[in-house]
Image (cartoon, rainbow, N blue to C red):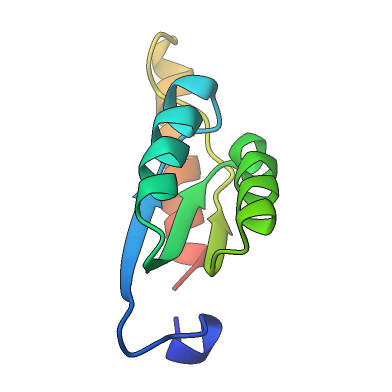
Length: 97
């Protein structure tokens, strides 16, 4: 990512938040972000989480960049789903580099 991707202010630090698209991940991260207004934010989430973050940041007028990964959780599934999930994560990470 280039610095031009975010409107970097010399005095602002960047905070990266990685969260799944469920309320158990989204709402705690939004509470944290709400307290840290002097930061620029990089958000890594799935498609479900993207809409929550976009709505939140637009209402708060905070500077952010969102990266969406198409992944599913490898937990609580049979071995085939676990392998597929790990492949999705690997492919998604490689697509962003």
